[in-house]
Image (cartoon, rainbow, N blue to C red; front, side, top):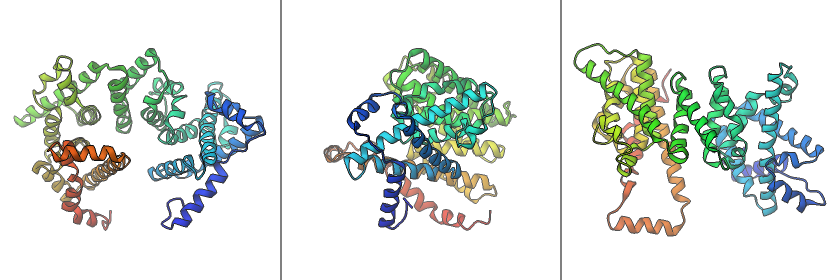
Length: 435
């Protein structure tokens, strides 16, 4: 009901959840308690035993909600709820809610530690699971909260690095949640040590060689952020990207010359996905301009844009001469490049690819193009929302630049609308598909 069309119902739902989940009972020494809690690394441990029991009841209910409804929509609704209560109708209510959110996160990490110890000792963890606290449920809820309160989750994030070292035995769901947490909190971890960052970098790179696609989709963005903003170890990322693109270029030359490709479909798909995600989340072209010597290894691929080069390769592997899985991987990565460089989506070759996929017999290819549209629009919406949050002075500065002809990336702002107008009939037709 927090997303109801009726304003009064939304407000009532928010108010009810505020009272049930985010109220905080203060004792006579409220000021001292609050100061102690806010300065503590673990707020949950500053509560009295009765306070901890009460907080665990709330966390159990919240965890149950997350477990019952596993969807992106739930994450968005939870984010709206936490944002609403954190800026509540009064300052005292907002402060209470922020304190409760810290307590919830700290309590989840406490319960995660208990579940880990039970598993390590070979004890029956049934009691914890019955209470709603298993390793899987804790990590799933923490991953949801990591996008809502990254600073609070970041205080504990280093403790999760062990799951990446156990990637070969850990469940994919567990590994995926840990990667989501690191992706959301990496830049919020307070004073991360050099040894931890190096270890995390090595663990992420090791995931690239054998992990399934859903893990790659989380590991690569995390690795790009880590290298670009913390370790600055660009050489490792350059070599991963260069190796993938070289393999794709060789395969393209062999096939274009009438020969049979040397790579299996599985390996070819992995190179396509790694190259596409790396190019989406790390701006090789921008860094080459700033540090030409540092990135000169890329000159072996092309003197021009890496995005343009990869776009040509992906369009080649999206053609019908290749197996359906390879085409699907290429279509998916083209969607990533279109988000990176929107104007590529309206070029004739890209439109021909989308036309071919939408009118073809492959439901998976049609669905992937529609997913590309959806992710493109979501990214565009986030960008517009961020612009709307800018203050008016900044908006006037942008307008002044536009008046003298310096529009930057504003020329690409209408690409999403153009795409939707072009393919609206087919999108509507897809809603009536029997598949």
